[in-house]
Length: 340
Image (cartoon, rainbow, N blue to C red; front, side, top):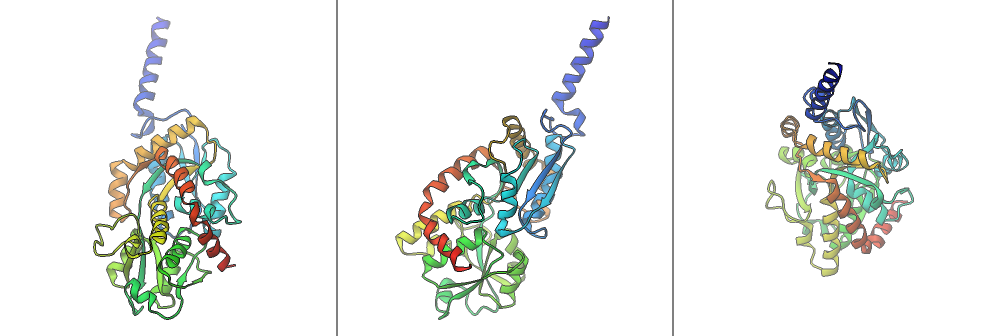
């Protein structure tokens, strides 16, 4: 009788674990994250779109991990390098991960930035949230609306920068490809500050994600000039890509490389050599969270598009792009030197 009772109890416990009944409706808990607290580093502004994404996704990630919580921590500074370096030196047990624009990691490394303490290829990539296209916008008082107008200014165009992030590096490559001299003005605290500088006419152009620029564009405060992506976007079909407007074949290749890097956009990543079991559980939970109907409905309501891609795909793409984009290093290094 005792043996039968034990076997029945064991079967019930196994069924509960398999169906995830102990998770309040969430996905199956794995042995690594069950009941644990996970730190999610966001090396960007607390008020920006990156943090908005992270805070929106965090409870759903906790749900599908079976974790007690996923705690978002902002470690802003040095164009997101401060928080990224912090992750690089974190324990590889999977209890600390990060979320940011992956292109920043690649470009900072290609530029041989002295602030880089990591090898972007060796991070553990866990899943892309969205390939949010980058767009170059101008203010309504700019006096020009296209590339020809920018090149006809008769002076270096003024670009406001919040640091050496992917937008800073991409704009440097774009200016070089267009043959348009650029003056970078630093010291801005975040995307909202750089956008305001353009709206007020204190700067000429601004580069940001399409989701971040949609509001000012729809209100008429800004107008899109270029899409820095591999293809045009459905929401602004008449706006050309940077690849289309660059005519020099050699320069066009550089812009195409930048576009491919930028297409990686926002994603989760972990420390190098992250525990294999933790990596598998985290990748599965990120996929489940980003396909959760409740999160998708919330994201749509908040104008935060989600377009999931697996971490294994990210891992391979970062390795490839880091190798094939080495020709950009001189331009990126020169951009870095220009603001010292």
